[in-house]
Image (cartoon, rainbow over all chains, first blue to last red; front, side, top):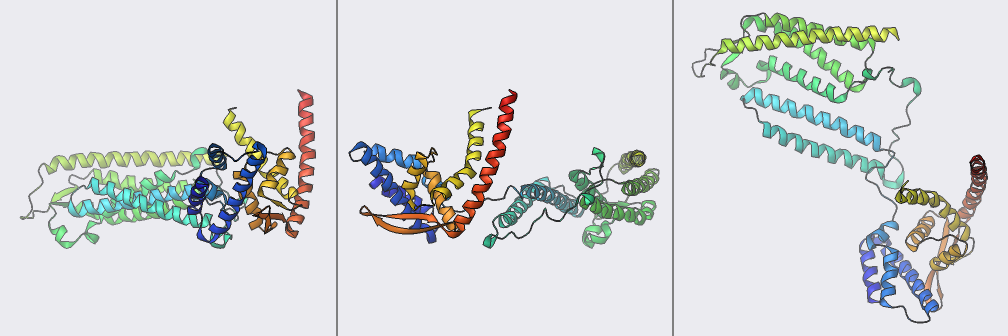
Length: 316
Length: 114
């Protein structure tokens, strides 16, 4: 009987207090019935081995206690696809926020804090994971048992994305990287708006005047590209109008980049006596010029590729 | 197909039917162990770890009434179908008969083809 008492205590410990007494009372009665059956069949008292075998057959105390309670899931199978999608979007958001923070840190201090970036990504990732999982736990186990929302109710076949080719689906990861890089270059070009004055006065190099003339136009195109990126994150598929907009943005940035690459100087010394001048600025300008030229060429190619896809879609 | 996979499918198939069998048996009053014995005699072997929580769940859903009774020097909790349980049993029983008839036909055709 001592073994049974230990078993009952172990089960009780895993049960909620309000149902504990009732379930234990019933389980105890059922176990005694089973022992009585052994007694009747064998015409003797059950051995300790038989008692142990009976309890083992009943199951681990935690398992038994769990089976008497309503089933609980962290995320129900029904909500799992939405949960996975939310984690995906959460990861992209964390990545973009991490890159922006890294870019601001780099542009304001000149140091590339990769450990800080990694630490920030891990911490933000864990918080995002915990928040999303917590929300879905709440959706999966709503208080009162009534579903808080039904995500798969509002849809109709006519509203599904008009996608006929696999490439029409926009990868959210790719879109996230595009968005982060656009934001980085927008911040870089307009450093004077957000960088502390003290930091600006300590800069060793700045954009040359001819480059500055292009910055407002380039910033406008970047802002359009960012807004377009947001649109693409919500409606993640290519259509003919979207491809034409993408081609126009790529063409606009390409033309500006190719123009900038032709300039003799992209960066110039600030001639600030308190800052050590950058060595080999001429070579650096040459390398940056080549880089900007090839980025411009790549964007030109992408604009052409977008137009080729417009042609492909217009044939279907 | 692995034994494990087969066992999983078998359990899945039995799960819904067990509810029907338990509800059907509880047209008469039973306590846990006597219910298990009755099911065993009818050819349905169900382990205690599955049966007792199932009975409690059905009672929590209002399909069974229960009361503690003294018998043979010990207390036991007796269960019996509630009026809601009777209605559900009728409905599920009819559904089961229909399904059994249709699946039976399908299986007959399949075994006839082989």
